[in-house]
Length: 136
Image (cartoon, rainbow, N blue to C red; front, side, top):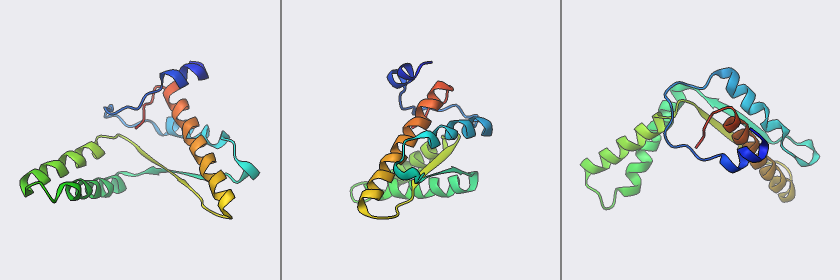
């Protein structure tokens, strides 16, 4: 797949296979993130692979958030159903990767580092797509 083919064909995926992406594939995908342009070589991005225990905690919090969003106008039984659907949606992801950005320096540097981190994420998404890995 060429870069232009990856750009034109990449799509957000909502239904995932249950098998986790192998560690070696994740490492390779993330290795393309560090090639993103970044002014003054700040390398502000941080990549974190979320473990199963943290994923469970985050899914439980996502359930609560989904229920809070509808609390004012939905009865308790349907709130619980909405919360459970949110929990299942979160848990359906076989792997969760977090990308964060260091925010240091003046406003200009923070903007540049944020942009560099966005570029890193795009690199990762395109590399993953080329490797047959979809993302949301």
